[in-house]
Length: 239
Image 1 (cartoon, rainbow, N blue to C red):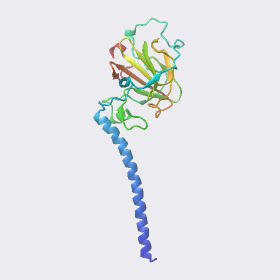
Image 2 (image 1 turned 60 degrees about the vertical axis):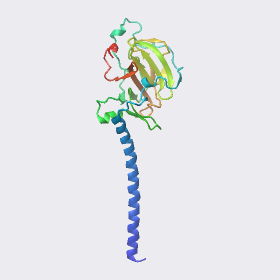
Image 3 (image 1 turned 90 degrees about the vertical axis):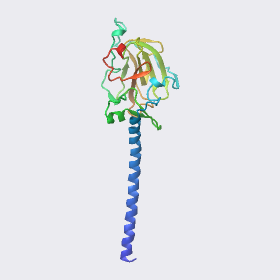
Image 4 (image 1 turned 45 degrees about the vertical axis):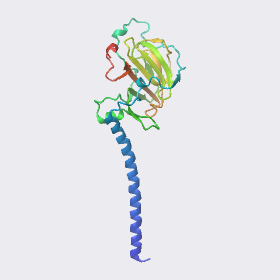
């Protein structure tokens, strides 16, 4: 083969390889762009019409009765069961007493764009984006979950998305929802006191991407979500 022909063939092969490499890079960039702009689009439209994103707006979700509760939280050294207390003077406590990582914050329009993107939830295998209506905590170790305030256990369930869930209602009407629990230590209709142990950390479809020892925590009143971060230390009745 003449020398010029060899050079032409070599040049063509290099161009083909470069085209294939460029195509692969283009596909990767396009895939990343879809995920990025999906989140940006979700943030931009506010997701006000999305019914998903928290247990507050999914009270009728498919579930099965939870049978893991022991109905006994009196062995908690921090329990206020035997002390005099006034629920109207209770402030919201954090549902944990160890150092945890806040893996997903409550969606707040006042957050930075980066923080709001972190508060956009996309369940594995789903194409729907929605706002986080609670906070998700994670740890490398199992941890106890405590009642943020006293009240009545109005519901326990094993939810297909959120795993084991406990709902506790304060006398003021505020509800605390503890989900992704690995173990539940209370039963329906049980009265609990602030700082009683109501369960242990675990995981669920909702939190499995952030760890194996997690807690999904929501606060709500009149079926409206409340930001836990701005509620800690506040009087429950004022939420």
